[in-house]
Image (cartoon, rainbow, N blue to C red; front, top):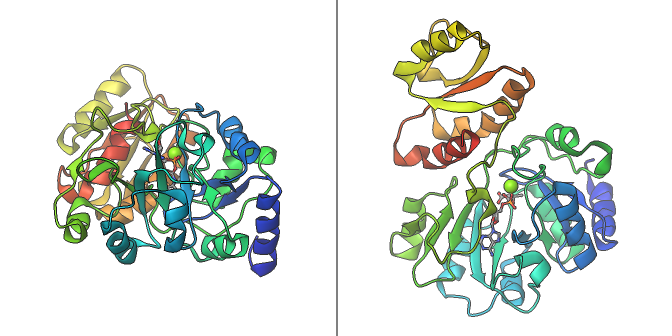
Length: 319
Ligand code: TXA
Ligand code: MG
């Protein structure tokens, strides 16, 4: 599905309450018109997602923020200018259009303007806002190609807007601005340092006790079906031998600078830069999962700030 005609059809179908899978720069989303309760309910049903887990509302233009949020802090203008369209979701106090079925009953709403030409064209054509979680069954690996979305839902989701592979490959950074201090609820490719430059202060990290629910923060998220574990590069060979001795067939996800000569099992090596690794991560997990190995070993990337978002996803994939 490419081109303006398809975008027009997708916009019409969304207005009629149907679901459309949309490409974004992060991962594919499962979109519904955010002002239609029956359409949004269909997202929860198709994903198998608990009703109290809020959805991100995708906008086409920063001017829409005041319809969806109230008491918007002045810094939102600067953040929008610096990072939108782009992989940053802002949690704000909810406004006039943000209803319980989108916020999961919370008093806050998540907003972002995605950076993908097809989806921006769709948002413009549609003229409203699209509620969209990642287009995967609840708790599973986010899709980064249209083929992943089709594998996930098959005929249950006929309309998939194919925008090619997602350039970033992991979900947006979630920044909570509804509390006293800015707080990163989910790390992503826009990191704390980049945000601090615009905020004028370093954001807090991680969900606070009072923070709203973040379904992606539940332990077993972004999970392959194969039981997966993180292993330090130095311990990799010994762990493979141990599994083999126990009669198990492992598979492995490595990164190229820690690539053993002979991994001793089916393996994928991702590039050793955090951006390139993130771009390939979910496709690699899907490929390895399909091997139906007994165990998936994931070599832990370095414990440094630029790897924070990737390590976060790997922690959850192995929880
Ligand atoms: O990159 C992304 O953010 C992708 C693309 C499609 O935009 N979307 C995505 O949606 O990852 P989802 O639903 O899979 O994850 C969104 C996360 C969830 O963990 C949800 O709980 C959290 O955002 N969230 C949404 N609204 C929230 C709110 N009002 N307060 C706290 N967390 C919220
Ligand atoms: Mg998700």
